[in-house]
Image 1 (tube, helix red, strand yellow):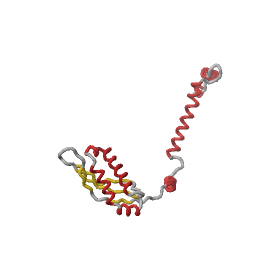
Image 2: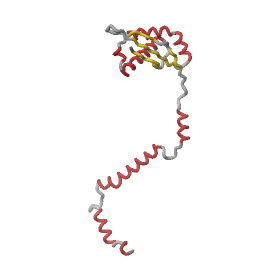
Image 3: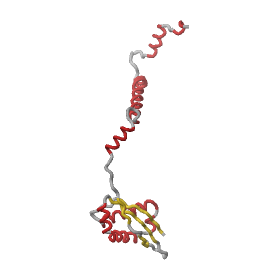
Image 4: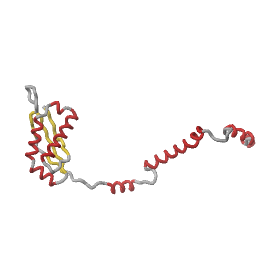
Length: 175
C-alpha cells in the first residue's frame, strides 16, 4: 500500500514541466489568478474584520470614544403660542378656516422671555401671512414644510436679534 502512494519522481517532473511554459515564466493570467487575486481577497477580508470592530475593540472603548467626542448638552426651551384661527383666502362662497397651534424652539431662557415680550408682534406676522394662504397651499407634506419655513422666517424677522431654532406644529386643522 505504501508503494502505491509513492509516485515515480520522473512522472512528477514531467507533470511539472507541462504546467510551466517553455519560456520558464508564468503567463499574466496565471500571475493574476494565483498571486494577485488571493492577495486582494486576503486584504479585503482583513479590512472587513478590522472595520467591523471584531479585533481588539470592546464596548468600553466605544463608549469612551463617544464620551470624548460628544457635544456639550444643549438646553432647549419650547415657547407655546396661543391657538390661532384664521379664515383662508378662498374664491368660493364657502369660507375656509385654518386652526393652528405652534411651539417655538429657542436655546435659552433669555430668548424665551424675549418671545413672551414680543408675542403680539409674532402673532400679527403669523396672521397676516396665514390669511393669504389658500387650501391648495397647505396640501401634502410639501405644503406643511413650506408653511413651517415661512413661519420660521417671519418669526425670526419679528424677534431679531433673537433666533428661533425651529417651529413645531402641535395642531394643524383645515376646514
